[in-house]
Image (tube, rainbow, N blue to C red):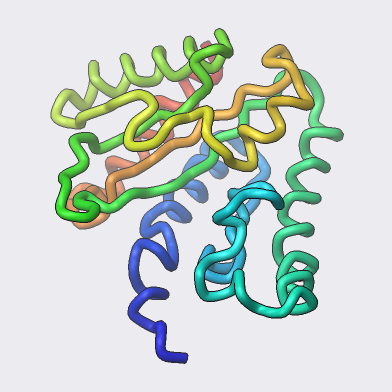
Length: 204
């Protein structure tokens, strides 16, 4: 108790990201893996040894409590992801859906959509380039940037699993949405258009 404002902020959850993920999963007829716990307890998108695996609210808990959080939330989430990697045939496209606030620490983020990938992986680079071109062609008012506002090679669930699978098997991309888009009157239709572009790029 006492940290409700943090839970309601961008630190507590990624506003709009679940909507994006649900629309994409439905459009692509793809399995959907949803994180069910706030990163203020344990960050499901960080590896076990990352310094932000636990937040400042939980990293000082007794080791047994931190272990319980891992067993209850982190291990099942990563285990389900590894199950997908081991059972899905052919090349796997992993789309991780996240969102970012328009202004962070007084600095404006100059993008509406960010596509994060590893520049060293040719297929990821080409896939993101193709999707960016489709969005810019049909929705020229949207600012699309690659590896912004974060780097696509930084620590994350998809990124960590690149070391186990070659790019011939795994394309791991993070789709970042500016939370300001959620307040647009055409947000719902915009989501459908974005899902259509993703589907087209996936099938191309």
